[in-house]
Length: 322
Image (cartoon, rainbow, N blue to C red; front, side, top):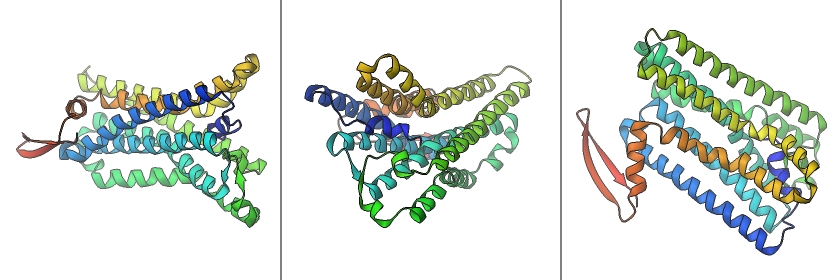
């Protein structure tokens, strides 16, 4: 994850007034719990229904939801740490940064995997059940985590080899540039981000045009698949806020230096919170099957209920958590 993600928060401890600092963090925590409540309901819906949790499409989607929940939790945690402690132990900072970097890179890779699954479902429907099995889907998820680890693990090994042991016990402002201080690591990071994002963009463009050209007749499934790929592109644009955040912040703070704190706070919301909010809206509510179960869970507040329904000759128990 770019150093901006945390340095824009950590370079200045909340130098706002007490009321401003409290109100900003209250708003942030309300958004955090609201988003994770929706995402948690999506995960619960997925786990509770066999017809969903055995579908490769939903497995990849829920993996992205869980990944976003982890990423958002780490971001908010570091934001609050700055307000409370300002500096933290380098070892703890490394642990949090590594998780954040993994989850940040996982999201675009997961989008590429979802696009490929839709491409196979539309262009090779006869082989979809053979190619997109549950086992291969979980292997793909493991591959996503492996690819997400490639850019950061060498940096960690270099850090351990070059820094004295005292460095890992010292307090530090938790940002990637503060921990991984070697200049050449910055260039390596930028190149790796460019490679990963280019790969994902090429995958989305390729699958979109293949679906479009493969359509012999305009059918609802083909239209829906093409729209899904477009939404993947929109989600990827939101992911790229991570990388275009620093120049945008620098641009606005140059012209409005007296509003630096406000710009950083708003930028943080747009870079971290907004993409995590739109993901379940874009995918969860748009899918007819998933949204039908999701609405039932969201509307049930009083007590746990159990409803048995017959689907495709089998029985599925719908468990309402609240």
